[in-house]
Image 1: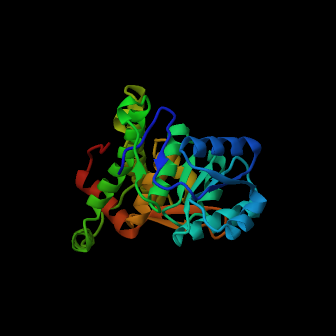
Image 2: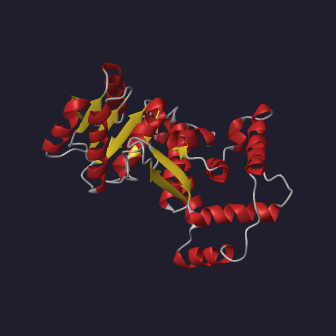
Length: 307
């Protein structure tokens, strides 16, 4: 991934002639979105209310990106907008960032079924710049760089960039091609799986959280494993886990957790399943092979507390 930075998280794009359309649920939300876009060196083509955004997007001849900023629930109009954006991104029409608050996360994520939509939650300036850069880089030429050595924010931006690369590298290693995947499935699918109690998994989760009393949480950030444990515990207890709860269980910022969740779903380790009773919510569960692998892991470690 290309590095990018400046003192104000400014990003220069090779071609910024096409505008960015901004749809926001309030004046405050609009201001936050506009600041992020202008700081990234892109031109705002229109500032739209949620209820008018779908029509304008359909009529727009060309756009670099669409940014949706949400700080309150606009019901069906919000749902229609996010669904339209997700559909358009899947067709390569433009890049998109959807910025949400934590209380809206389940409703928003339920409407996004396209991996290339960047969903961020309660994000700071640098996370916003990173999300926009990631989204646009998938549909446009690489970024033109400024002098990264003179930038006070360079190190934090680089860390965010490396975090995304680390997610991709880790999960690529888990799924190293069809042959390796098939071999792994065959190895874990034979024989009976010993019973596993929810209390055993809960004790591991509890032990992991206790580390934060003695050391900085950043030392042990491992969102993929934390989410695996949370979903395994829920499966044993026959509970359903919405996206927002799983992000909390990941013990990292929500935007980071969402990136991991997206990758784990794309690799087939997790499954997103619509709530049959609520069209504005999605549950996440372990894929069958993932569940089997987790249970065999606990069988192998036996009485050892696998933190």
